[in-house]
Length: 354
Image (cartoon, rainbow, N blue to C red):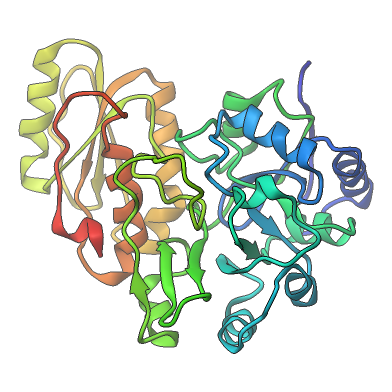
């Protein structure tokens, strides 16, 4: 089966295309669609068989829960067993947008596989016009992780989706590149103080202004098989096929030279603007902005491009240590993590746990 692709205007999606995608979801099919963060792989959240297709398509373990996307705050409240004042405060301030709230799970509207069988549910109201139109066209929540194979690079274009899921998903709504470029921020409001479960596109410094008592939960060191509180909490995630290493700007050339001497393939380099990378045969250098939001918006696309160019290794220049870069540091740390059971040293940084 080939996946159907429908191109849509990202600001004014064609109602006929949205109706087509809604019909696929209603019958239990899978639809990949753009959000402001990355492309999501959607299924109706109240249908265990449909959600099971998401896990199968991605190769995702059942203990790793999904985010249920909704069209309105009222719908989110109906999916929750309780809606604490803090959830109302954060939804009023940051929804629609790249914030996911973890709340106590209600009795209806979300099947067990969405939550990994756990007592909480992760909810988000996205701001992307295509996602908003699709959610408004159906009368159920849409469970949607990133539309990629498990632990691989998240997709920021429809082409990225098809690279990993062509034939595994019924329909892709192609709304062009996403803007934020990395996944949503996840906050658990079932605890006091609230917990940050995943850094994301809602900048950490902005979130801390709203939640001064916010605590940060480190990702589990390994997958235990028990239900996680949130998507995106496993140690290795968001990884290219190429081995990824990090280095300071002054050490880039030395790390690249060492990898070139290994002779097992091209070396990609991702440097910050203003950092000079010495040209050399077999080295593909890319530059990203020194602005955290702009860097995040382009990061996965650059890593996809270096993977597609056949790089065996990718060396990424360390990014700044301040709060604005927390989500980028998180993604790079997880992408550099060795696969379970694999050898190889990974450069570690104290800022990875910020």
